[in-house]
Structures are given as C-alpha cells and as structure tokens.
Image (cartoon, rainbow, N blue to C red; front, side, top):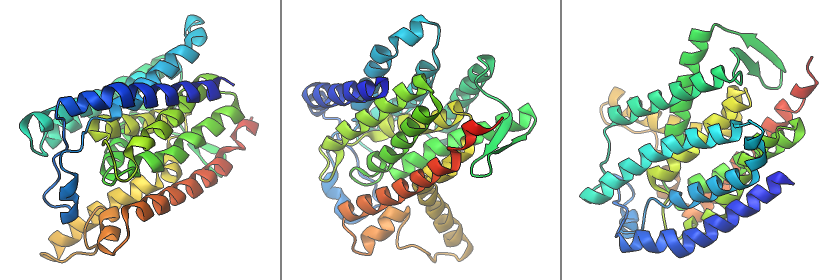
Length: 330
C-alpha cells in the first residue's frame, strides 16, 4: 500500500507542480536546450525546448519519499532517504552542468574531468555511508545462481565506484531522444518495486514506487514531441537512482540485466569511437549512440522508444526471475 501511495503522490506532484510551475518557469527563463552539432540534422528543430525538466520528477519523488516514509524516518530508518539524497547529488551536478549550457547558450557545460571527479567523490561518499550503516557487504551476489562471492573491501569499493559512475553516465548517454531515458527506466523502477514487495523491503519499495510515479508523470511532458527535456539534471539523477537502488538491495550485478539498454547504448558509442580511430575514419554504425543509428535507418523516434522500452521490460522481467529465489537462501 505504501508503494502505491508513494507512486500516486509522486505522479500527482510531478504532473501538477511540474506542469503548472516548473515548466512555465523554465520557459520564462528561456532555459532552452542547445542541440549537438554532430547529431542528426533534423534534431535542430528541437533547439529551444526547455531543459532541466528533471526537476519535475526530482521534486515529485522527494515529496513522496518524505510524506510516505515519514514514519520510517521517525523510527530511525533512513535508507530510502539515503538513496534519494545520493541521487540528488548527481542531479545537482547535472543541474550545474545544464545551467552553464543555458547561460552560455551552447552545448558545453562542465568538462569531462570535472564531472568525473565530482561523480567519483559522490560515489565514494555514498558507499562509505552504506558501509557505516551496515547496508553494504563485500559479498558479490550473482543472480540466477543465487550465490555470493566474497571479495576484499578495497577491491569491492573500487568496483562499486566504477559501476556507479558508469551507470550514471550510461543513462546520460541514453537520454538522446524524446522520452527514451524516461521510458526505458520505467520497467527498471517497476522491477525494484516488485523485488521490494517480494522481499519485504518497505523503505526501498517506497522510493521505487515514487520513482515509478514520477517517471510516468514526466513522460506526459517528455514523450515525442517533447515539451521539455530532463537534461543532465534528470539523467544524472536517474543514473544515480538506478545505481543506488542496485547497491541498496546489495545486488549490483543485476544492473547488467535491468540496465541492458544503457549498456548497449554506451557500448555502441565506445565501439564506434574505437573502430573509427583504429580504421582511420571508418564507422560500424551510421551514428552513435545506437538510437541515432536507428534514426538514420529510418526508424521514427516513437518506434525506437517503444522497441527499446520493450527490450528493457523483457530484461527486467528476466532479472526478477533471476533474483526471486534469493530470499530462500540460508
């Protein structure tokens, strides 16, 4: 019931406050998106569409987490708040980046090194907090096999920081079409809601429910043709959210399945760049990341979003069956 309530509150706040308050404010600020010059030419028509729209679901999720999780916090249980605050730090990094782009009217914000260092610092702080609270173990759970492999803390922390930063940036890369990052993350949120229900993780279920509601509401504004983009504000927040939930459930390897679209998108970018350099100008894809390749193959944005979301949903369902036996372990 708490998860449903969190979902409804987050949906309502995101839709109402976002649509009536944040979106008009972004328009008044002329916080328009600058379109990458190396993207598909027809994307130039999207220039000027308000960005930083991720503020909508960040507010909606935060409201639901506090409202529905208040009793838990009064009882001294803060894990859902930790996850939200961790994601919020990444959202803040994205917001600063977006603000710089809007201020200077070009698609350049923080440097890659500045983003990386800030993200690593945030990841280390979160992992340290989770370990201090006894919510993180160096036992790496392997889905489907239902076994855990013990590794040393230093190795685990390096691995964990790498996974978190990688996930955050993979979601950011995926956010390249109207509604794409939003839509493919909805099955991920539903996966965590389902697991929280199955395992009885009430606090994390509240957060996952709020995430689901916020994304569903934001999709009303972000689906093609988008009235607003989430910007780095939203995509970095979502990346932080997905990564934090995986570690809060103490099963980071599940990101291989629930984050399959993010991974494929990122790999397509890496492969394209590596092949281009190795062959002195040849390309494997018509354009990277992968969603642009399909655009140049003639797919509409809506078709790409639907297909990628279906892939995400199938792998999230597969992931659920891969972990549902974990609570039976001794």
